[in-house]
Image (cartoon, rainbow, N blue to C red; front, side, top):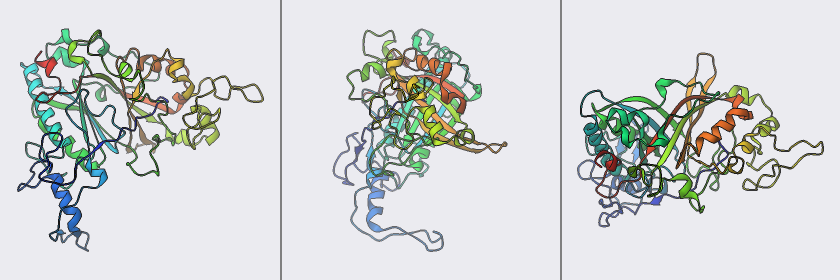
Length: 441
């Protein structure tokens, strides 16, 4: 975890359910047919006006509807992110309420490059359709029939092993070399890395699950699931005003995230189109570091609030630095108390992760929290699905984690249990699929 915040980029609101107006993605504004010519988006618009009523006996009577004019989707369901673009979706958008991370390994056998190309083509078309509020092209499950796009994003990446399996070793980026070992790592290899990685996020849990099932079904015999992780964040609108998210420790988590409005944002987060050490197919792409970080919540919650604040270096109530001000106030690293002690301890997490304390190293954090139940020892298996983005992990995540590894006070209360590094190419242009320049270049 680092002391950096998530950009609050607002998703594009879908048009009202107007069947005559074309959507920005080129699809019918109703979102495409799902059953009997009715789209997911149009179905929800109609439902909003008819007042669908469940039977009083727990819904056993089914749905009863009366004809009425269609009304627009709710603001939550109407949020739409475009699939096609310079960068893949799911990187700069604000945090979503529900997420799934899943890694695949390609099936053994000849022709894996061709199989991978066909798979990425299927996945890209599925992602485009679902993100536009349409049904999946093949055997849609109907899980999200009555929902809008709900800010769905689907993001694809390649792991280190993908290139050897497809005979594309010469196209493997140097930046994709395996991450170094860290002393705090307790990694489960079965839940780490993978040939292919998919990130799914949405503001509705059923929409996210629907996308997960579609992606898994599209894999067919070409690839099998290596691991899957499920996460969540606070739902949009749950707070009186937009604010930095809190993690399961109750801390405001991510205050110093770089913002798309920063002059050097693209340089830090995205691979440039030219003059980079990366191969040409990575232009406008980024590198995702994925870590499953378990929080030792029972130990953490035994600390007083004051002790927790000393570990982090910020006030728990509002995320402001211990040296005073508001959440965005610059931390005074030299300030001392009456006894001459530093107000922000030397091993405080917020001090160690500051870019100006790490040669300018910066990452864009976009995590999900997770809770996988209670273990046999009665301890919650919960924490953070840490995802960070950068143009070069050797200049972003690695130096930050090395410094944290040497003396972060928070390290006593967390455990890194899984890890992965993935090359995420730039976005697909109209008529292209993600990774096409790698697989057909």
